Length: 233
Image 1: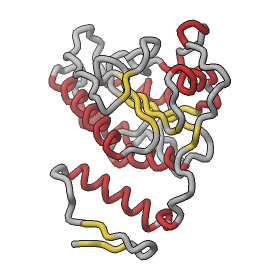
Image 2: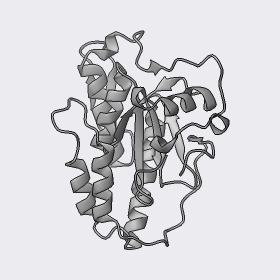
Image 3: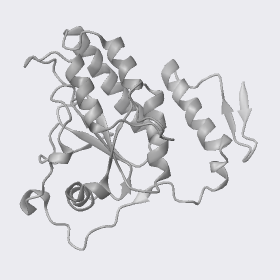
Image 4: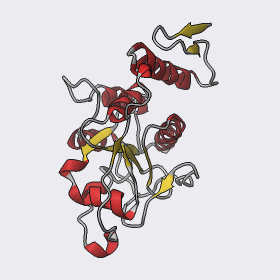
């Protein structure tokens, strides 16, 4: 069955084009957000927020940046942190996407972390937001920028697989309880759902057992960017 956008006329196959029911659900949310909101009528409008490149791309490792704001919020539990700038429509879309995937993203404003801003725009040459940093999932921290549905699905699937591995190892004894509490912990009274860093850290501390032995992490996929050594995995 095909649905037709009342604004631009684009057709969408509502029967689903993916084998995963979860991916079909996310695709439906994206289509409705894009077309039923009439956003499709303004394709030339900027959807990502460009970073202003510094006059000199000074190396983060030599400039003595304080990169504690880029450290994992928990030493074991996989999570995604999204770095944003004001007036970034795709940042808002991505918050909704992660919430629909039952993995609300932690949102951090680059305006409040000047060192992280300088690292992304200078050392890593990232030119748009949102920037999503995936922790405790791959052998090294991985990130992507902008709104790329394939990379988003890849990150969500990898985080879910890591959560299941921790659950199987009894390091995350109650995965269902954790996911339920996670999705219920989004910032209240906000139009676009996200988690605050301190809320996630407290939630992780309640659900994860302390144990130095962890399941092996998978290799960072080619589709995602590998971070420099200054960012912890």
